[in-house]
Image (cartoon, rainbow, N blue to C red; front, side, top):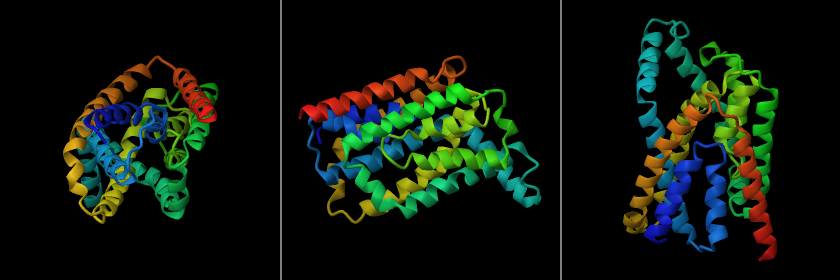
Length: 273
């Protein structure tokens, strides 16, 4: 991998991790469309690093809320009343929402890994993301705020997050859809979507890092990957800020159209090749 490839893929990861258009799908499709033959070892190491970069971005953006949640959970446990404080309750709901994706990721890990080797399957799954976004706009009433969340709401959004273990199904897109189907406002659904991504991203990054340690001489390529890490972290932070503002008034249809377009282009190019 070259420094240019590292920075471009870092830009792709930073933008698409939080926009509802599937970062994992783009990391499969973009090198394929550009004809980049990146060695599997380099691709794996790079994917681990940019995952950590976007985790840094979401933690940095929500640092104040995360501190309130941690403080609320601490005092809630001490007082044996964790559900009375709104921040503590939100923290518990984040944990609850993490469970479905964690179970699915463990149970079908091999199937998921195989899906990452198929750009065409990834393109088809982008159509699935488009469908989810359209359903969210058509069905969601958007009359609830995130502080009205219940256990069932958290489980529903967590179940939708489990769909995103496959490349092409956007994690943010599926979880925002789950929130809007529970009648949350777009911006509130997105905010909870980003917060609930932290435990699953942290766990996935840790497991991937443990796998990374088993690869001989994995540190040799780090200098090439660092620019991509920085670009992914910065663009990830900016994309969170932009999307939350956009969703106050804008709809998800524009992202659905993009997913259909990206999927079609990939399938057409694959057919021509």
